[in-house]
Length: 309
Image 1 (tube, rainbow, N blue to C red):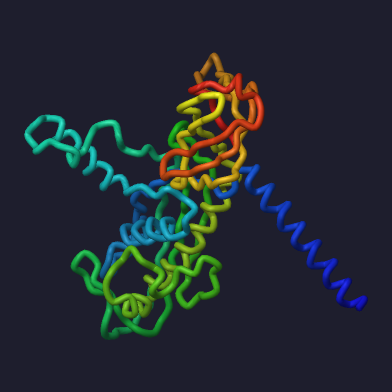
Image 2: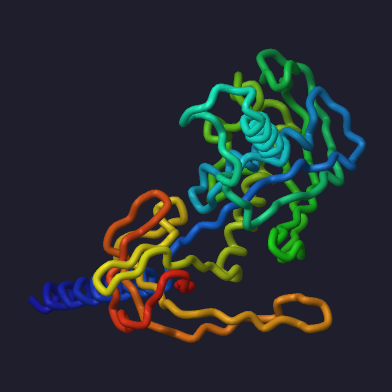
């Protein structure tokens, strides 16, 4: 009987602890997402194998970021440039109009930029069958080993400053990464993935990609996240953040007017100060916006105010 009571007590404590954790996660904003784009990684290692290691790594990293679910992943610099050219062409009036025509001013801006360099590649790959088709090139092989050294930077697109950097060493044959981007989960590069995993430089890049995504995800807690009030009535408030940004029902945000503290010598924003107007709770979530109800300060909350977790 005592054992049952003790077990019940621990169960109640565990449930209570979980409830508090969930409430804290909702109040803090949870896993809110940022838009990110990956630039080309330069091959500074002078390695010239059967495939472009810089392009391949950027492709793998983009796909791994998308599969992680922690970011709003945008196309790379080249693809975004192509999209801009399509918009410019549509604006000339020489293309068919209508709802499908790309419109200027609709492209999602990147809050975070990732770039880097391949600084060292070591490859000792024996021949083999199968392989992967990438840009018309076949990759394959068995035996030997592979290693890639990569320097990676995370840049704030608003200021252009490097917010974090790391050096990653990827090695073939390494296993057990928590994100698990191995084998069929690699994505990005399409074709005979079983053959690709036999290419030692490819396997080393897989390892490096997993480390890179873990590094980038860890930086999110130190990056300020904010949104705006786009509609405000005493009984209904709409914010410009939705499921795409990781918002979910029950999340609580503080609302207020924000004043930037600007360096008069450089024009750089040194800090921001929020004058709190109230708090809101998310009641309904759509892809790019969310409906909220005021918890306090309803009369003070206005369109254009800033929200913070």
